[in-house]
Image 1 (tube, one colour):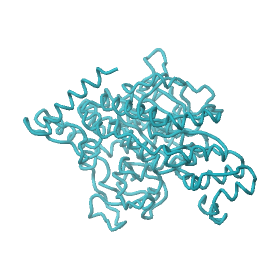
Image 2 (image 1 turned 30 degrees about the vertical axis):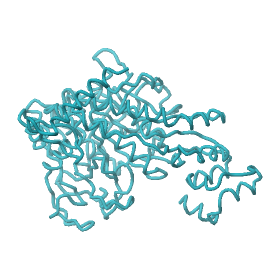
Image 3 (image 1 turned 180 degrees about the horizontal axis):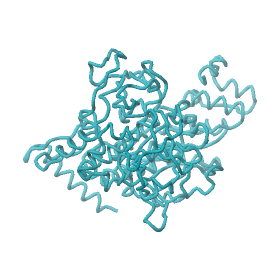
Length: 535
């Protein structure tokens, strides 16, 4: 749409427009080629535009894969990203200050958010440190597609989707998500809902402490005026969080991992459709890697980071793919599993089109029903929007008529891939509860879930893949099987098979006692000790 608008101007150099307005006497040739057409058009028509500056030099996080301990991996990623951003952004930040422009710095994808006119855009875009100037866009969550009244449940009855994926069989083995923290990146959470309150990391049974456990990415929020207190004016985030951990102790057993703890970040604002913006999204992802009290980013602490994040939203417009991909990969490098809903754009092929679902670094989830059939609304692959032809989704989970907590204090049935994703995030919590050595080993966790998934029958062929191909572009590897995945996770972390890192191949490495990889690991351990002692 924005390209068409710019095309309507005949793709004339912006310099011509500027001279016509008599606002600028000269311009550096070709600086405007670095600026998104929509940003230029808005600056011309309105005098100012919101924009995001993408720095040319991005941080190298490959070293994170050398760390086995999740806390060390997260801290390394955080410190590397922050230091790199401080160094490389300094010239641009100084230029903006000199121009009197207020800005916000992001280390997660090395970018700066600001607002200014054409003179500001020119001053920034012509700097060699800058790769591109983007619009801030808008973000819209991926559902739900349907809502229905929640019927009464028999005392102690477990939700059918949770039964289908065999989570209760895992519970019987004593693994209910203990020692694991899940996060919900969404529109908010009703933290004191009966099914959620006791599972909130900020509740000790008597008092609430929201610092490090809740974040609102908006500077002003008319729907949640007290930024430091969790809220959910929509209900979407309360529902997804319930599917991960919910249990009120009185028969409403709605969550996959009822002993896990949850935290949450709000980056979506509108109570009707859930619109957010790229800066709020990036702020939530930074907070995910290193949580901090509301308004105090200097106190960011990567040791408080979650183990898995549920993202039941999709960026439907104005989202620069390079920024979102870098952001997503930073979260993965930090040892955090990114679970992402595939989208609700229907049963046609190649309908998985929006970030974050399109990326390899996302664990993308489609929606099936309680009868192990694909839903009509679940988006399919292959991914065409970035030209990759990547097979997606990775797996599917129940997402139709799912009963969970609602923001009126009760329960509601919703449908959408938004409802499928939390089943997978909850499964990750069960796996890490049973096999803590897998914490931070994102590729290993994903591979186990994929290899233990149950293929289903669809009869659909997309991108040359059919039911006979595993994975395929309809259901990926299949519908998740929690019991099989947990058993495989336990087996994978037995003492005789020492798993280390997310190596260069993307898979865990089995190390012999005197192998070269083991020597490299020992060397990395020395580097880690030195790094941790450094100021």
